[in-house]
Amino acid sequence: MYEAIEMRKVMADWIEAKMEEDEKVVIIDADLARANGTLGIRDKFPERALDVGVAECNMASIGAGLASYGYKPFIFSFCPFVTRRICDQVTISIVYAKQNVKIVGTDPGIAAAFNGGTHMTQEDIGVMRSIPGMVIYEPVDGAQLAQALPQIFSYDGPVYIRLFRKVPAKTYFEREDYQFELFKADVMREGTDVTLFASGIEVKEAIEAAELLTLEGIQAEVINVHTIKPVDRETVVRSVKKTGCAVSCENHNIIGGLGSAIAEVLVQECPVPMEYIGTRDHFSEVGKTDYLVKKYKMDAISIKEAAITCMAKKEG
Amino acid sequence: MDKQLKDFLNQKCIRIRYLTMDEIGELGVGHAGGSMSMVEALAVLYYKHMNIDPNNPKMEGRDRFVLSKAHAGPALYAALADKGYFPLELLKTLNKPGTSLPSHADMVRTPGVDMTAGSLGQGLSCAVGIALGSKLSGDGAWVHAMIGDGETNEGQIWEAAMYAAHKKLDNMICFTDYNKMQLDGGTEEVSGLEPLADKWKAFGWNVYSVDGHDVEAIDDAVTDAKSKKGRPSMIILNTLKGKGVSFLEAKWMNNHNVNISPEERSIALEELKRGCEQCTRR
Image 1 (cartoon, rainbow over the protein chains, first blue to last red):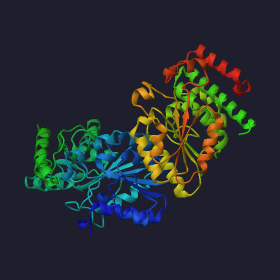
Image 2: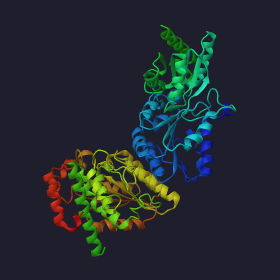
Image 3: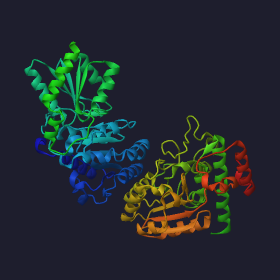
Image 4: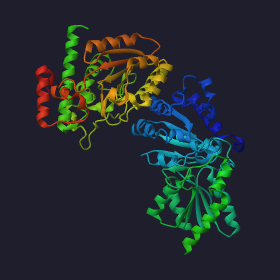
């Protein structure tokens, strides 16, 4: 069923059900409830579904105040406006003050599509990852998100949810045997020659790259690093010890994001050749996401080529 | 206000100032000016109005105080120590290695501190969140916040102002410590605030402008604010930066964060002691 459902709907349905069950749950929007699918919730919970208007700084600090009063706030906006715009409010009012506020950003990276460069985030993971103690989760599909939300809710502390809000191009985790575990990366496909570490919309590209590599006799391992911080060091190292090289695939600047997180682990634990897929320290132009994925060489073919380059370095 | 209460509150002001100067003097440097200017408001809140229990700092339904101009932590700590939240001796650890008293107020480390602040502009929004929390839970608590006049330059202050009025947060009583000086100069020289009271009125607040060193005037304003329905209240405290110590008052234009030598510490403590001998006993 998740292959046809927008991820914002999965998010909104879950939070609405949670508000029904737990009177301490509150949501705060900043005039993007219509975009984020949370608008209808205020009909049912007019007092606990707040909208501060276009005032994201206020939203973050109000969330912290509510959390200090024993409430469990979720704050919502587009990714840029809950990260780079309010980095200080998130850092001080929420994280430094140890307030349990969940932060939901939508349209990560180039997924802002027609909203263009101002709404694209090349830096949000970098910003959030360097805030001490912040947890970052990026879902792949609605099925995974549905399993992740209760665990994120149970975790006592701030979490940044980097949410692609529309219907994902492909659904991978809607299967009975799938058990999501926050902080634990998912090995989606086993291989012996190269590890592809991927998050968010890049998971589809990495899986397709692995299929292309098979045609050339290369067995790629694909790992979904859904919890980008703290990164699952054990799974990362175990895989790379087997494959001997790595490619990171992310919808973010290759500086400061998933690739950097993986490289930090590998440099310490298991130095191997590594290639990075993502935007290469530039802003993004406006456009459809599939166009931008190709333009910025974040597609399956580019990942396949990066894997071959990486393997050559290993052998050389 | 009867004379007995007034005398009591004024003596508490001297005591808070004495402990504050001793605390900053022990370290040798600190935000003395803005700590001293808000003392009367602290005394009126902590010794008359607030429903709190120093033995149970996290008591449910307690009244709250958010020090948004959190660099004035030393004065808040003096009041909290005197109230019994922690031993007076702790004041001597201000900003020293391993202390639970960082000069910017920190709810994680210090009993009695209701919200962490220090990056200016955020505390008022946090107080709005707290006031919303109290309204949602229906516990009838009062939420107080103290902002600085320099802090009022921050855009977030006005985001909070708009939303507090929109949500009719009549359980919120805020103060502006209007000592007219910010770090880089007079508030009118840097980025003029005037007409400050009119601005708050235009934002939908119930506004008072009082002598911030007159405990009776502050008490009257707080009492009146508590009777007002449907609007948050702003009490503008007209104050003097460094109030209560002559050499600090004399350099009111530049006493934001100052070195206090051992000699100056003694001079300050002696002057305060002359104002009230019994207030300065440990």
